[in-house]
Image 1 (cartoon, rainbow, N blue to C red):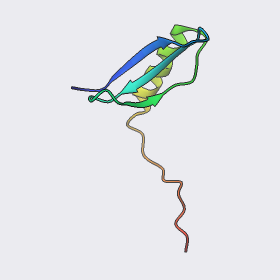
Image 2 (image 1 turned 30 degrees about the horizontal axis):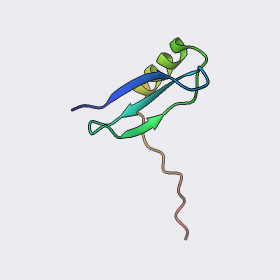
Image 3 (image 1 turned 90 degrees about the vertical axis):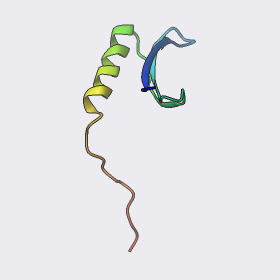
Image 4 (image 1 turned 180 degrees about the vertical axis):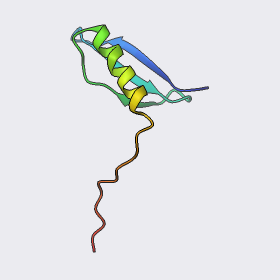
Length: 62
């Protein structure tokens, strides 16, 4: 089963999204947005940027 995004309303009334792996494990979650439309834009941003390169910021001590 492929992963999926879930959009939901949090306890404070804001909107959030989470990304779940195929096994149901949550692998990413968002900040709280004031509107559902903003949360959906956040999902689209993650989708559009998912193929970005990885930048390793862990410096190797020499």
